[in-house]
Image (tube, rainbow, N blue to C red; front, side, top):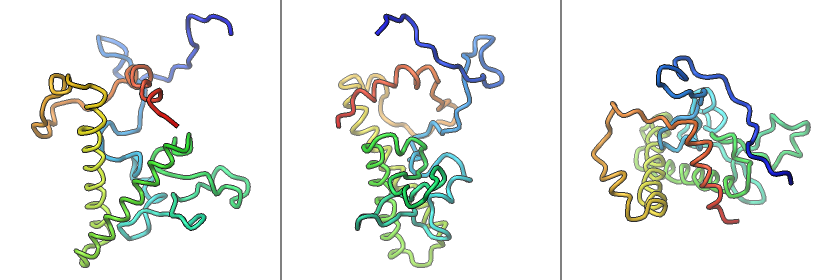
Length: 195
């Protein structure tokens, strides 16, 4: 391999109002910065119909080899019969590697497990209420895993110094994540994966 000092990366167009007057240049990112299980549900209302069962609180799943898996994505296939291993989820990277697919399947099953329990406890709830209440619970589970298990492993004993205890939601804090951080510093997470 040749020694290179730089990687050539195409740069996206900037968001209006960024890249001047001391405001860092940012590119459009349609994903939410909130830790809300959006990789499962998507970041837009228009995508939700791909994952949610019509008028129910459940997420779509397919039976494959006697196992419940994510819905198949037939949109990228010339022959739908040959696309049984291409999934669709709220995160377009769902098919990137098997570990990510497994996490999506796990949380989709978890959503449906919780929805089933809530449906039995609240038979008068509409499908939309059942879905939204279940989504809140799954989002809370993802937050608990992030703040109680993942971040303490990354930050170690300095976590309380850097983050401190939760004091409630503060709408004055900008939750966005800079593109510089997500495309460079936060890539370290990929090196943590063990297959």
